Length: 154
Image 1 (cartoon, rainbow, N blue to C red):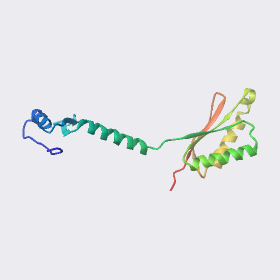
Image 2 (cartoon, helix red, strand yellow):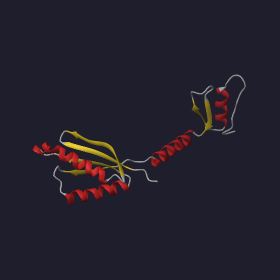
Image 3 (cartoon, one colour):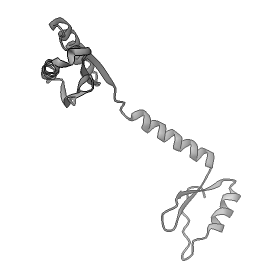
Image 4 (cartoon, one colour):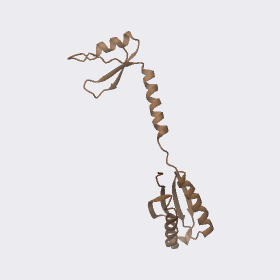
């Protein structure tokens, strides 16, 4: 009886379905209300809700979470610091995280925004093997940012 298709020729009878659900001490659950005729199932409603939540939880767990790691530079960042941050960015991209690198301009250092852009482009060029540029350097207020996303693994 449970899970069995009931097709009545001609007129759809909801009373029959409700009576059968009462006999089995279960609920009549509407699965697809927009179908013609509407699709219903005789089932335990609490169990039905539990299974739906379980499916949604599984889908959520399978969804990939995007992590964005930030790396901060100054307009006059030294080579040693640059190389140190470059290695970290490489590691982040290999782990699958996106990298947001930015040059922060303090006070009058905004005059050196060309240096900041050159630094970010050099940074993106060095990471070309493990990542691809998502957004070119863009000045927003006192920050010039660039986004680099990891390349797909083969």
